[in-house]
Image 1 (cartoon, protein in one colour):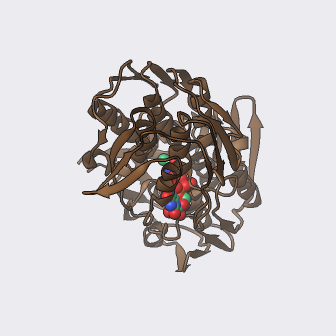
Image 2 (cartoon, protein in one colour; image 1 turned 135 degrees about the vertical axis):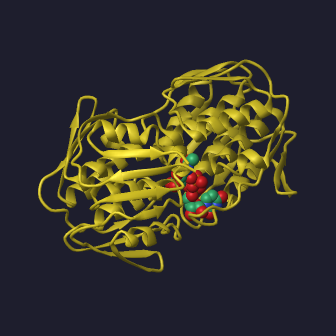
Length: 420
Ligand code: UD1
């Protein structure tokens, strides 16, 4: 397993380009299965999760071509309606092939995705949405087996214990687009990635109103065509590099980053003492002076994203006071705390709330990445720590950050990969 080594203490400055959004492109790729026509999806990041999706397509009998940032889905029908455990278990998001395969072919068998280190991650809302549309669903041998003779539009309340669900909304939407009549999804996820999925579905010929709002109306159509579509920039990658500029006291221009997708984070960065300027084709972030303590509660969009919680905690470790971070989406998403404390941070956890007492300095240490965003948080901490931080298990990072060490090196960081 590869390691990442970060030599701390460099101030970052310069410009880096934000890649296409991982969380937007995965459901969009899955949606292309709704048509036998060819689709061309652009601005797709070069990531492990994308190549896993390509492997799923191949296992379903659909030809794909991945060259640069263009993912082309060839013409043709699926020859297999089953997404295997071997593939789905490596990437939870692959459960989004369930809705499109069911909607187009009337049956689908997809491995149950299971939990992960950030928590239990149930799929009851996915199944609720599909069942409401008329699917018969059984769990057999670790697989979700869904069948539907006819899918019929209906009114669905999709809110769960922790609010709306991004991928359950995606699965339900992708099933509703080919159902008979009108579907109304209440408490739909409003994340930009869901709005982007609706953009792609509409380009395929779907009839959708209210994309990006809690009430989405879908009028089913008989068939969809392939489409040519460009994915939105990755707001989580952009947010991570905004925090990189803040934590190192540097100045970064993030090409393609969109202020409107990161308002909750930007609000907190300003409160913490940063300056965030919207420019013509991106965002510039810098900090002069100390980092102030800020309190954060993660929420569904447009609230503060859980996917930026760990990175924000790294920033808080060296603030000039006490910060309080409460996790309302994944209450157990705190494995990074013990690793940050290994680097000299002072963080205690009370239930789903972390209390972070700012320290003057972090010191580099060997640490272990536990999940994608926690790994990014450790890189950020390493950038500002004294000495060397060695981060193991960085395959998590390769799932979600395109060319991370190249991008950071280009703006002055000393970071490199050690192959093992
Ligand atoms: C997506 C993102 C992930 C992000 C998360 C929350 C992708 C590929 N991943 O994951 O990066 O952290 O949104 O913004 O887009 N829940 C249920 N039942 C369900 C589904 C979810 O109770 O059937 C709960 C979850 O346990 C969690 C909350 O709802 O507490 C939100 O999860 P959800 O929005 O579904 O996350 P994902 O869509 O899996």
